[in-house]
Image (cartoon, rainbow, N blue to C red):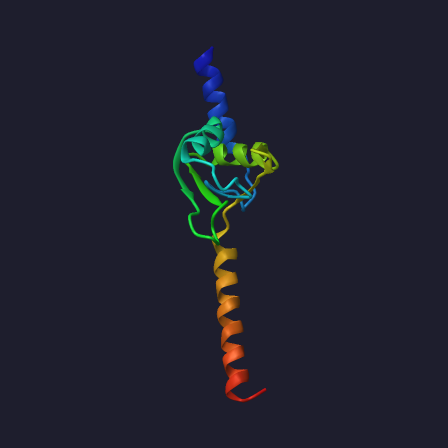
Length: 124
């Protein structure tokens, strides 16, 4: 009976349609600055096997992290359950990593810098 239930679960997962933003990499904000990697694995590991956790270590990135799950459904489960979760008095924000949005922001900054340089050059 257990194997049959497991096969049904695998089949249900294969047929499930996930929103396009769902992926194995999640972005976490508003983490306590003193959180350890072990604590991160304790919190996020409850939702599935983790391939990697990258924690911020510069003034701009501290309190932020990327968590990479082995399975996309584990990442979805973590986002669904951990967004708004209280960690040491801070409510964490858990989102799917969207690389295309990150590259658009970088492009926008580059264009703004280019416009500023042109304004300076033509004294506008």
